[in-house]
Length: 374
Ligand SMILES: Cc1cc2nc3c(=O)[nH]c(=O)nc-3n(C[C@H](O)[C@H](O)[C@H](O)COP(=O)(O)OP(=O)(O)OC[C@H]3O[C@@H](n4cnc5c(N)ncnc54)[C@H](O)[C@@H]3O)c2cc1C
Image: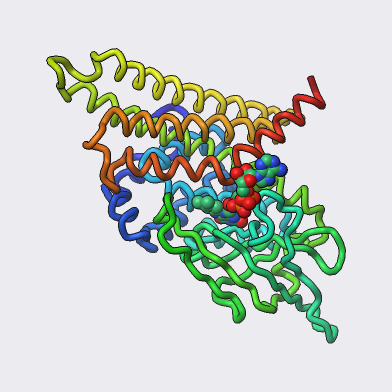
């Protein structure tokens, strides 16, 4: 345990996770009681303040915790990421009663997922068509309709945080939709390339009726603000998860390179394999440092904090994808079966280049920042 994770018992997490990730990857499911247990212990949303029942971890502690989990299982880390995004969104946009109610649930074993993407709005979230509108007849209730794509963890979730448009105007709203409400349909995507046990689903909302208290802060916030707050947490979390992927790859590749002998020498002593090891090591150090940089900027309340989250995700994801590929190269046939840690890393890391803003979208944001500020 590093100093940064001193307040979270990572040994207890390791004991719970055990050698489950390979099986979870094969079956496409993490045991629900394990997820609920981790949720109730606060691990899935560790930054929730103690006054709302969470551990109240700082960003660095939560980041290192996320890397620790990410090194073991990107699917579990993905569930952690969406639970953390949900908690952050409630904390930022919920009123007093909503914070107390929902954060209590999210640190008490309930699970949440977050629904932004739609068939017609992936990279361009400004194009979302899901709408939250009054149910009419003076009831104060609201109706929400729309279709969401690739929603991580929806099959486990008790609450679906749905990002939509509010009324007929341009502004947004976040509705906390009970997953078992009439009109909610969850259809898992079959055979995803990576993060298989996190699960990803199409979620259809067919005139789902909600009380006004289910709309965070009453709705009417700027869509861009809603997305920036939610995605910034997600980007940091994914970036730390990528540092974890690289740590797992480095451990597996060095262990193999130390013991496997070919052509009269340990493979780690062949210079071309040594180069792969050096690259994975460098990638892990870079990913960790860019995450720490982002944490420092957020903790300082710096004006470029949101951009540093994009930078962290962008750098860590591209290094994780390359590093995982190099790790498979080092282990060769020994790492080339589905459940193996480097095989999972190879598939899971690719997803990191697509989510929370793809590599291309991240580059556009970083270029705009450079043009505007430098
Ligand atoms: C494993 C996984 C988990 C996910 N989990 C969730 C979740 O929990 N909740 C959720 O809401 N969504 C989730 N998503 C959806 C994810 O956010 C979207 O897949 C992502 O935003 C990209 O959208 P898209 O797939 O529609 O690709 P598109 O937007 O169609 O993009 C296709 C390609 O075009 C590029 N592109 C698009 N616009 C531009 C541009 N202006 N300039 C240059 N290139 C561009 C993209 O970078 C990409 O390479 C998940 C997706 C995956 C794969």
